Each structure stands twice: as C-alpha cells, then as structure tokens.
Image (cartoon, rainbow, N blue to C red; front, side, top):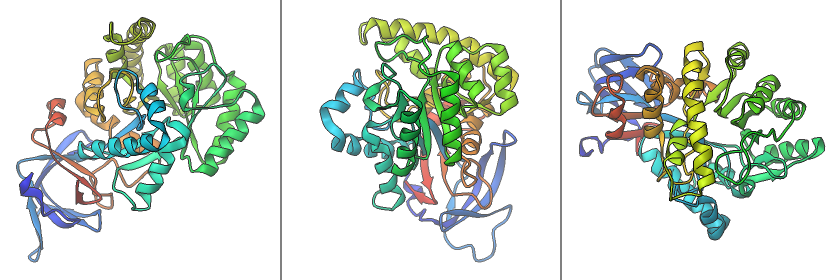
Length: 395
C-alpha cells in the first residue's frame, strides 16, 4: 500500500494491466491518466512531461465494484433489526456511514441501499453527496413500500390502498429517494410465509407507473413464483432475490429488459444457520437455496440481465461488504468469472443509468480496485485488494 500513497487525483498510473469488462479481457501495460477524479487518457506511451506517476505493473485494475442490494444500517449479526431498533435512528445513521466507508475501503465504490429505518440511508447519501463526509456513491430507496403484514415492516412504509401507495411514492420522492423498493412477497427473514402475494398485479403496475412518472425505477423483493410473475407483468425494473422463476417468466424478463438481482450467498448463510437463527428462517432459506440454484442457472442460459446484489447487513451474514462472497456464489452456481465481474460493474452501472462508472475507459470516473492477481483467472483475487481509488483519490 505504501507504494501508492501519492495517488491524489492527478497523476499517471503507468504499466497498468486493467480488466476490460466489456470484452472480458485484460489490457496490458497501459498508461492511465487521472485528472480531477476522471480517467482523462489511456495510452500506450507516456508524454515527455508526465508529472506524477505510480507504477502499477504488479497489480490488476478493475472498475470500482457496485452492490445493488444493501441494508447499510444493519450489522450482519444474528438480529440486525433488533439491534437497529435498540440503537435508534441516530446510531443507525452513524453505523450506516461506517458500514458504507468500510465497504468503500474494500472496493465497493457504489451502493444501492434498499431499506433503512425512517429513510436514514437518504440522509447518509445526502451527507456524502454534499461532501460533509466521505463515502461511496449511494443510491437510496428509503423505506420499503409494503402492505400490513409485509416483509420487515421495521424498515417499511405501510401502504394498503391505491391512495396510500401513491402517497408513499410521492413522499419518498420528495424525501430524496432515487429508487422505489416494494415488498411483493414474504421473505425468509421474518415470521411471514414466502408464498402469498402481498400486492396484486394491478397494484404493482400502479407502483411502476407512478414511480416511472417521477423518474424513479422500481425494485421488488420477490421470491415466490406467482409474486414474481406479477412483478414481471407489471414491469418492475429489478427482481430482488428471485427464488422461483419459471422459464416462461425468465423469457418475459429478457423480452422486457428486466433484471434479476439474485443475492445468492445470503440465503446460503441463512440456510447454514441452524442453532443460530430461528428454525423457521433456516427452513425457508433452505427452500430458497434449492430454487435459486435452478433459477439462476436458467437465467444465465437464457440471457436474463443480471447484476450483483448481496443483501449486506442481513442476519448472520457478517460485516459489510459482502460482494466477495456473492461473486464466489455466482461462480459456484455456474457463471463464468468475466460475467460475474460484469454483474458487479457495467451491468449494475447500466441499471443505475450511470454512465460514469462501471468501466475503465476515458471519460469515466476514476473508481478502481487494484488486485494482486488476475480476477478473470480466479475470482479469489477480490479477496486480496492492494488499493482502492474513489474519484481518483486513494481510499
């Protein structure tokens, strides 16, 4: 790390080997100029007056990683919601900022936050954006829109009627939400059943219509087959978890350009938590893992849009971040390394409509991760990070 302490947002990274995520290959011995937080030039040779240089000949650079499904105020312990409630919103905000900063130090330079108490993640995002504190790019959804008896109501905004749904969406927009998150089915973490549909297809379509009118995309927590089918028919932009998806529905996702955020590793952890978490949670997670293995394999085969999301902060999942675990799970379930890296970079950036991140190329933000080994050959390389750049500055 000491070799990189002079990276300050205006320098050349010389002899750099970087991952071209679009083509799934490594560009070797390139010289990358960083100026005012942006990759301003990539060339084979250096100009005569190159200024500050940092030799990157012994590392592999990738774009900064993007996690599309994070609960930033949760601690990843055995009872994150209980901890959150006991601590209160002020401590939750401080914990959330600490988690975001820890994530950035480990290569996660962009986070989509999908459920926090009293919309706390929106305030954290505002503080980062205004330069009050340092942190990753944070795209907050605020509280999860859900009906009475929904999924994790402690981070929810209850909306049972069409009028309440419309009011909730407009409130979150005014508060500063960048996405809308809706609980379309039950979940593993909680007392409710997974199967029953929490909103009708017509109600989900209303959520999509109103959110899109306000220039926000919609993410849906959805695990059961009928619930996911309703989300797809309604045009929900991203299906979160997506445990049981039939082939016909996956094909519809391809046709409509909808995306799957599979969050595989969190359910692996939940399923292996016997004696640690309540048995009903473990049992539901075991069922989800079996479904996800089939769904994920078929989704990859059919060309469904997939981006990486972890559910970081969830019960017994461990400290933030969780991207490394999710990468290995995606690979274990049959996705090649190049595609896993795309899911954590360019695929996610495209879903966020952010054209400044996700790729190492001229004109993009200088968000990069330096690894000791080539991740295209072995994703374990992400477990050994040398340094991280955010907007050209050393994290």
